[in-house]
Image 1 (tube, one colour):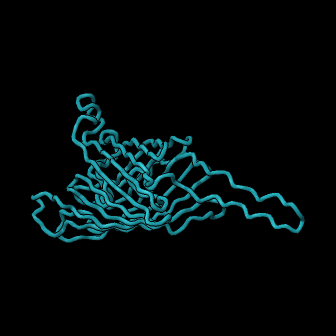
Image 2: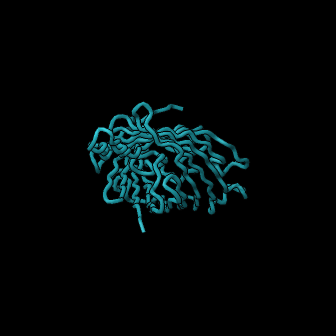
Image 3: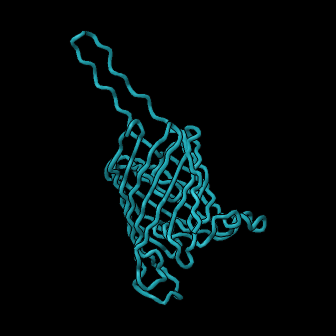
Length: 283
């Protein structure tokens, strides 16, 4: 299978200026310790489909609504360039139980996939002056509406585990790598297998509010899911909102679905439009 890595690259990362030590008032008086700037790589907890190592602040909620339009952009004016047709939608709600840990519940109307997940940030430091973050992410999902043609039962459960490593190069470019283990990627199979996938993501921050993003998921070739998933788009952020407008060859959104691959080639004739909207809520 041909591997492409979309030059995903992204974003102007605004770091608040550090606070210098207080001026000495006497030779023997010790100055105050400088204020340490928090480590930040990606601004949001998720790229287009892949997670980042970022988490919410303790007590914060994150609500998400996302769509992937099923007609291809190449269908032209007759399908309003992909907008006039059925969609897969996704609703998600996450809660931060600590500054470095969050829980989430997500539902997609594709096979009524219900996903429960947990993410824990395990590292946030500067390695040689480069901000680096790492997190562990895992989840389990149930497909509560499987096609009757599958002819199988009790194979609707899926699970995944991920290591997320992100780094910021300069002030604008965030890069991430996400090795993944996925159990039961294809629920039509009688026997569940455990497969490996590798997610690559990048975001180039152009300003405080705008960035470019891209992802590439390297997955195993399997029946009906024979292609890697590629995504590129733009992100706008303002006032706790993140809005992502994307082009992708994958209409599958929930983790156990997206991580299994896509039936569409990564070519202009197979690109679909999509969007993600998230809102951080504080009560």
